[in-house]
Length: 197
Image 1 (cartoon, one colour):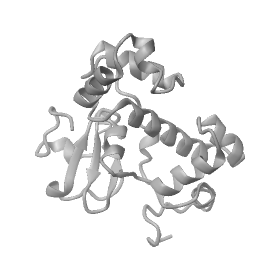
Image 2: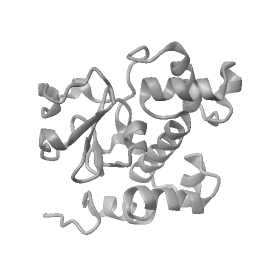
Image 3: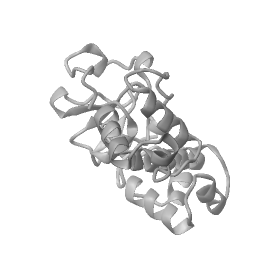
Image 4: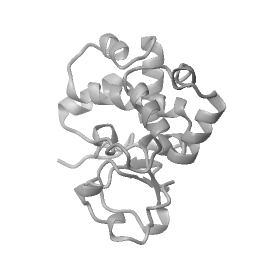
C-alpha cells in the first residue's frame, strides 16, 4: 500500500480524474479494486484499502472492476514514487521481457529485484507481469473483435487454455461471456448481479 495515500482525504470518495492511474481503491466487502474515477457508489471508509498499482491489488486477492476497467487506467508518470531500477524493470516488462529474465538484464540478483519491487510497489515482479498481461487481455476482449485464440497469443499467453483459466479465475466468467456482455451493453460487476435497463 502506498504510504502517501491516507483514507481520510477527500480523494478517497471523490471521482477526481487527476488521481486516475496514481492509485487503486480495493473494496473489502466486494473483493474488487477500482480506479479513482469509478462510477460505482463509494464504499464506506473502513471497507477501503489503497494500492499504488493494479498488480498490488490483484496480488492481495482483489478482482478488477468491470465498470471502471482498471486495465484502461493511464500509467503513472515516470519518476513518481519508484526508483530508477524499478522504472527500468517496468519498462522491460511493458516490452514483453519475461520476469525471470529481468535480473540478468538489469545486472542484479533476483532476490534483490524482488525485494525492491515489494518495497516500492507492494508486489513482486512476476505479479506485475501477470497482472499487466491479464489487464491487457481484458482490454483486448473489450475493445477488439479478435478471435479468442489470436487474442490469447497477442496478450502474451502461451496457450488458450491458460488464457481462459486466468480470465475465468479473475473475472468469474469466460472470455466469451465477457465479450458477449459487452456486445449486449450489460455491465454486471459480479456474476448473478442484476443490471437495470
